[in-house]
Length: 171
Image 1 (cartoon, rainbow, N blue to C red):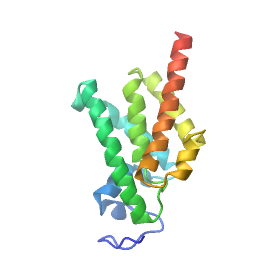
Image 2 (image 1 turned 90 degrees about the vertical axis):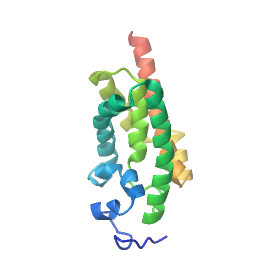
Image 3 (image 1 turned 135 degrees about the horizontal axis):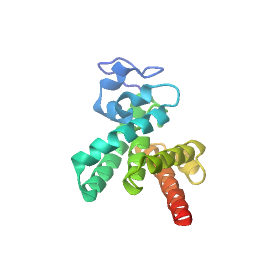
Image 4 (image 1 turned 90 degrees about the horizontal axis):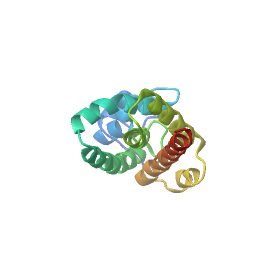
C-alpha cells in the first residue's frame, strides 16, 4: 500500500520529515529514536529507559502507571499498524514503540535501581534480538500492529522471568 501524504511517497528509508507527517509514525518510530542507525531497537529501548523516571514522577501511583502501560500498548497497536501500512512493511525495524512499551513494562516490575534496570535492559534486548520460541513464531506470523507489539511483550516477560529467577536464587 502506498501512502501519498504531505511528506510525499513512501521513502526507501524513512526520514524525520516523513515520520513527522503523521502522529502514528511519530509514535511508532519512538519520537524519532527509531531513525537512529545502527540498532534502532536498542536506541528506542534506551529512550524508554531515559523517559521512565520522568514518566513515573508524572504518573505517580503504580495503578496509574499500569493504566498508562495498557494505553501505550493499545496506542502502539494502532500506530505500528498504521505506520507499517504507510511503509508497506508490517514490522519495519525503525518502529520501536513496541520496544519502548515492553521495556517500560520491565522497568515497572523490577526494582528501581540502576543495576536492576541495566540487567533488565540487557535481558530484554537479548530476548528481543534472539527471538526464542514463541517470540519468533509471533514475529513471523502476526503481521499487523498487534504482532509488532506482542512479540516484544513476550521478550519482556522472558526478561522478567529471568530477573525473578536470578533474584530468587541469589537472595
